[in-house]
Length: 403
Length: 169
Image (cartoon, rainbow over the protein chains, first blue to last red):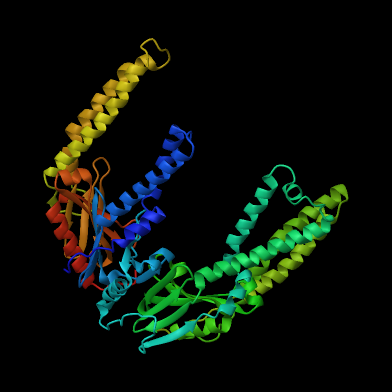
């Protein structure tokens, strides 16, 4: 067994600044503070800030002191815990992938965080081994050490690409413009806009009028302005969000592994074994189809956080997504349509709500003489037929040549 | 044990120190319980109406019973039930005292092996080995082994798991 190694002491600084350990104390501290009251003036606040920082420093220092790791020929062993000690052993063969993260502060100090995915599924336990705060070179050494258990040595990764690598995909920043059409990138800015509008509503009086002291333009201008502003916020938010996550994404094949690098502020370096990839999924949402965009994700068994780590192409032209998918998994050829029974099922299911409305509309019309509901029901049923047929049109299957 | 056990019982029992540890745990929980009972007896006046006169003697009686069970009976009972074994293919345990659970984990399915030593366990020189699988239900815990044994078991399991290439779990 190789001797136990320690993370870099510089990580204590990072954890002190980010209150990594002290954060856990927040639920305890708040009631305690409320008990003492926030009486005093600046002195109290300064004392409080100093106290919490010292506490954070002590927590970071202790957890650094009590943490060590060792990568032996057969397994990775991590020891941690302040009073209760825990030793975790992960056999190298069970490691699904290694991810190297570099948040901004880590980067400033030349450190990285290595996550080793052990795919232990026990609920409520942190499932992976995290070695937080090793120098960059040591992170690369650790990554290649735990992934070399099956022969072929992995060359150390540097930013200049060694010739043994094959680049599968490189991100183009123009594709950020697809982001506003993708639901998942819109969710966060949409929530932000919602919160903002509620805040404006909750402010007493008419804050806009009071603040700007101007005569409000007529109603429709105001509405149009609000709509345009909201749209602008949504677009900007989604583009910025997509840029933060996907900046500089590129995917290379290095020996038996796929390596994906991405991220603007936090750089992520994810490594997957190609042997573990069981399939590929390409998805094209409604908005993405309008502009011919798509995304490709690898299906990997037992990969924690597979949604993110399995991403092969986060956002890009659909042609590229399919090409990438077919390079990893053999193209099974054109899909066979489903039998007519599938169409009947789709159409019947899509027509049911409209049919219910029609029944209700007939009843309402006969009793009260209002026929509007019947008309609405007919329209919904008609749209249902179209919806059912289009859902059926998207179905298809094929069995590939097999492995 | 009953003769209708689903499988033969695991071969090895826990060290005697486990009894002392469980007794200590029982003593701690008894102390906490009696602090609660004492507070109740002090704060609730004897003249209070409702269910309180009954509670004033029922609670101490329940407390005494609890103490007798968790300190006097449960540690020995647990020591008799808790057994473990590592065979060629499986890690195998039986745990529980009122409800007993048999757990088998094939060595080929092991993902991670943890050795944990709680504060109390360290005082008695004991450790717990947890064998984690990719299933959310499949964690086997071998409680309260001597620390050296636990370390050996963990190393052995990890080494043997490494030798078996896992099948796509």
